[in-house]
Image (cartoon, rainbow, N blue to C red; front, side, top):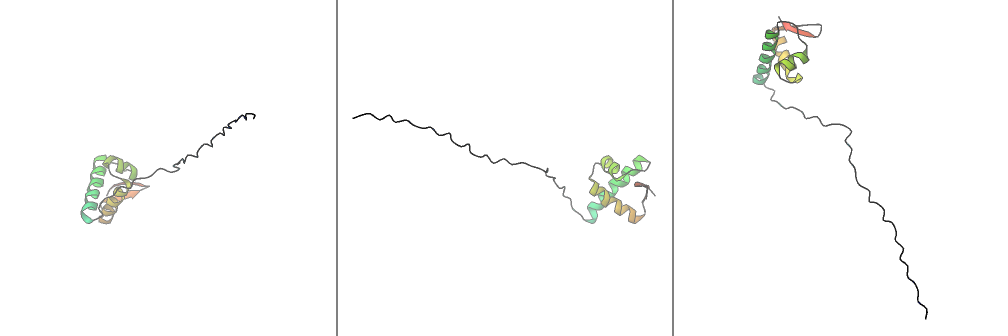
Length: 97
């Protein structure tokens, strides 16, 4: 009998597809705060003090940065003060009335 040579054929294994996740947008973390008369009143006080200390007209962003509050909180406080006639706006800048 003749011997048969057995040859093993090695098959390259297919690379497993890795699941890659791409983030196309960054998550924004929403700041939460209570919207009631007391908290909005405190934000109005922050806005008022900031404008009083500045002694000149400031934009919403400048007020928020100086008062160390968000622009949303700034707008809430400004709404309170505008309704009471404590501040006035000129050319997207606000100052004490």
